[in-house]
Amino acid sequence: MCGILAVLGSYDKSAARRARILECSRRLRHRGPDWSGLWVGDGGGCYLAHERLAIIDPASGDQPLFNETKEIVVAVNGEIYNHELLKAEMQKHNYHTQSDCEVIAHLYEEIGEAVVNKLDGMFSFVLYDTRDQSFIAARDPIGITPLYLGWGLDGSVWFASEMKALKDDCERFEEFPPGHIYSSKQGGLRRYYNPPWFTDIIPSEPYDPLTLRHAFEKAVIKRMMTDVPFGVLLSGGLDSSLVAAVASRHLANNKDSDKWGNKLHSFCVGLKGSPDLRAAKEVADYLGTHHHEFYFTVQEGLDALSDVIYHIETYDVTTIRASTPMFLMSRKIKALGVKMVISGEGSDEIFGGYLYFHKAPNKEELHRETCRKIKALHLYDCLRANKSTSAWGVEARVPFLDKDFIDLAMSIDPAEKMVQLKEGRIEKYILRKAFDDKDDPFLPQHILFRQKEQFSDGVGYSWIDGLKDHAASHVTDLMMANAVHVYPHNTPGTKEAYYYRMLFEKHFPQQSARFTVPGGPSVACSTAAAIAWDKAWSNNLDPSGRAASGVHVAAYTEESPVEVTDINGSVEESPKKKPKLVDGNALEVSALA
Picture (cartoon, rainbow, N blue to C red):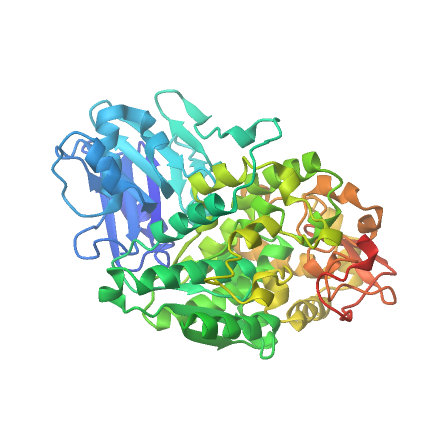
């Protein structure tokens, strides 16, 4: 990942203004520690700054990038996986670098703002056309890469990869929506990404296991495009294990092995003895990866919380719980000299993999919920995966969010995604079945059919318990009683949420910053709409997967109180459950029979 900052239409053209732009851009340098670039328009008042993480063409791919005549300039954060294909389809151009992102400037020269519809990748970019002093900014369809939009008092328009670069200089700022383009010619934002699953039509395409498998294999291989060492994040769950399995097979039989060796590097983090560490080690041994196992203590996680919140720029409880281990792991990964990792985010949203999907009443409701979840990914898992890794100059790529793969998976009749325990169909069954190859197994059967474990749970159940205890020691009952007055927007309802909010406000006290964070009730990562699927959930709204009572094998039990939470916390205690393992395996879910 890189960091971009653009200031357009500023009347201040002084040396002090340039220095201020450089200072703001410096706040993004953790995203791109390899080089810094700044372009200033001839007349001043237009600035494109770039902090580079060199993944493709490390030697000469510095940014901003230009077309042949240097009349079009662009600063990009991301990867364009189809850049070679686009070059083959375009007119002949003279390229200044081998960067995959340079194709944007040349393609814009040919087709203008339609460039966004041609790109296959993850990206945020700002492009300035000196021929008519116009500019565009765009963000990838799902929001894998972050982007923010702000306005200065002088009428200037600002864009930045993280809001920390905008917060002190913009009168107001907000998140730039995924799948949108900002056009100075048209005077604002418009959506360019409109896939079939955005409509209210329930899909009806038949499920073909091999077609789904091949589409995912293609998505993973596409993301192995790199000129630097890379690896995979391996938690031992289904999604990361499939990523590792596909990448490992490809690397063993591909020219890339000449560069990096034919043994894939895999990485896992957790408290000692955690579920993820055990499962990841087993998968790594099965696949033959060069496995790196990192440990952290609850105290080390607690000590990192302020830094984590500064980097991920949210006070959302679930995101902070999961981001902290990922943040710590990314530092270790970077210390090994690895700049890029492939990760498994997005599968649960596409296939209904969260445990609360067990209670989906029908295929229509399941499909609508998956659509809501995918549309919100940029606020949660994409934000976590991108910013937790970028904090240490590591890039995370997510093949499940490949545009073609999403279109295929979301075209399948959602009846195929319904959980049917009596028939042996657990969550994400069609994905599991697609890779259930008896002749040439991708994974051991018990891994392929392992129950969903949310990352914040899988790193060790005592992690969340430790967070709650730590917050309780810092937040008093009186503070909670007045929470609605101190924080009237997205009022925290638990001491854990209140504690995170305090840390967030220290870094980002601006009203605009508060509004970038979502709110609303949730159980086990559901949207608010899905809570109606089970009346019992309204009394147990914790974002942990263990809140999916009657589903998770370590679900909360009936005897002890837990807090009733929304996405930012809880409002009361309910006589529900503390963690307790249920005998048997993930399929023995009597409450759902």
